[in-house]
Length: 452
Ligand SMILES: Cc1ncc(COP(=O)(O)O)c(C=O)c1O
Image (cartoon, rainbow, N blue to C red; front, side, top):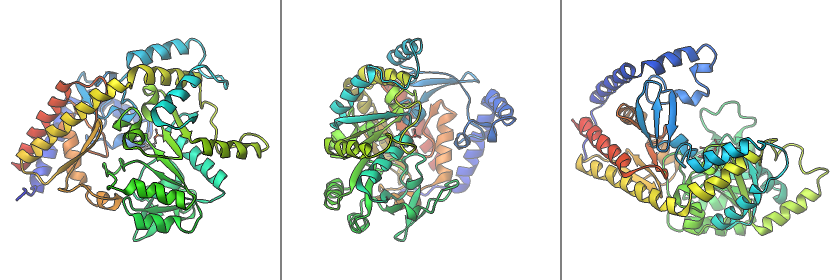
């Protein structure tokens, strides 16, 4: 019989960890108080208050898979800017390219030669021939949705309940008893989400067909696996059904590889043989310099081109961004793809992901905890349930906020940063076996304390 957790004990342990955090992080505490004078909630963005401690640690400097905070404490970083620094912090080839380009012009509204190289490399990795550049994965998704609506002449999109694709209005919806409703906590949505979106459950082929059948859906926007409510993999046959049904109903398939690039150099698209019409990706592409892009097939590109020719100018608002495709981000992207997130780097990173997952699995079994683990390539995550949920609703229902906060703070107090909002760890090219083994040891000790 798996053990049941004693909640009173959990709260006592949490209080102990909070005291330890405050005792050992005085300088971060001071900066947090100072920050409250000019920054809302004391931080640059509100989500920075969501870390497990009473306040966030302020960073002094970061290098590779490690960073040091303003109290002089060193951490192994498994959060890696929630994928933005999956390259490791400040990798040398990217820093060099950024420094060189910074002396030669940062943004021009004109193309540079690096864009040619990066476009060809994206085709090599993902198989799609045509690419456009922007600054964030949110933008890549927003622009792609606009293009899909424009060339299909259809108003709606389909997304998955509890998905996350950035701050894209159309996607911040969940499915409740078959209806599309606003996801709780979304700030200031422009219109009720059912106007723009049908939200369905992941892995439900019938619901997908029902959503596409009216013939008014421009695109389905999907991650290869849900990664933002824990990792929820596709069931066997789901991607085949998704591709077949989107083709049958004349709907574009947009695959968002922003997180699933962890599956390999060409993301899950290449690793699993997916065939999207559009592909979007951002975050780590330029080692943390804002950079993102979206690709499309030959057929889609022709339709976009034909559509653009009908406009009085290329676009007056929906697809743009003055800084999109700037010289600095393209130089950083080129260096990152050519020298940092290489095919060889992925081999090492994925082996480390396996090692991390095996370490966690071993501790779960040793302490007889009713928990499980999921992994895609160099990204791994543990769940506080025995069986991985099969969709967003099940995943959301399995959330144990109190326990997750404790796991994060326990790790943080012992020099390990996990990704907030998940129990997730990501490996970079700079991560070592010793980094992974430190996590295994700390996780094992935490499990021992939890079961008493
Ligand atoms: C799958 C996915 N797509 C897009 C985004 C948006 O990325 P950004 O916030 O960098 O625009 C995220 C952010 O977490 C994401 O997880």
